[in-house]
Length: 169
Image (cartoon, rainbow, N blue to C red):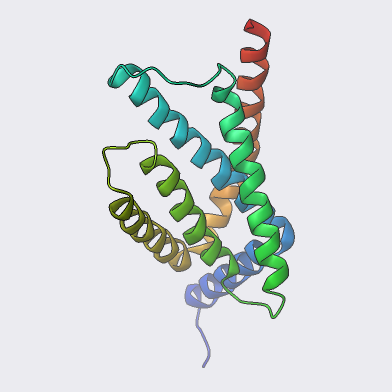
């Protein structure tokens, strides 16, 4: 089957983006990107609990920078491990990783609120992970562009927040 014109170019672009995302560098970039976002989502949950509900958080002021850093490290370990285990070259390793990371990010956010039943949080997080998988598998080129352009910015913001918070103390 031959593609004509822009359909061929689009298919080639999507396939190339999938290969770049499936490389070890792409997988690590994906882990850092989703880890930073998941860390920020957790911070939003903590902020809601602290300032929205008026709860006292039993956490140090370092939680505001260690949360994203720890999440990025954990997601990178998961990504590299899955990359090594998927040596049989799964074409969509990166999309599975997005699903896993979306599940973990949603679960970590939902677990911040004890009012949400744990089973309900698991089911909701699984649905969010599945939707994350479905969204990125359709447009790998756009997703690869987004992660490539914004990962350095997210890392700089996390490091900047760590520097500012440590400097204030």
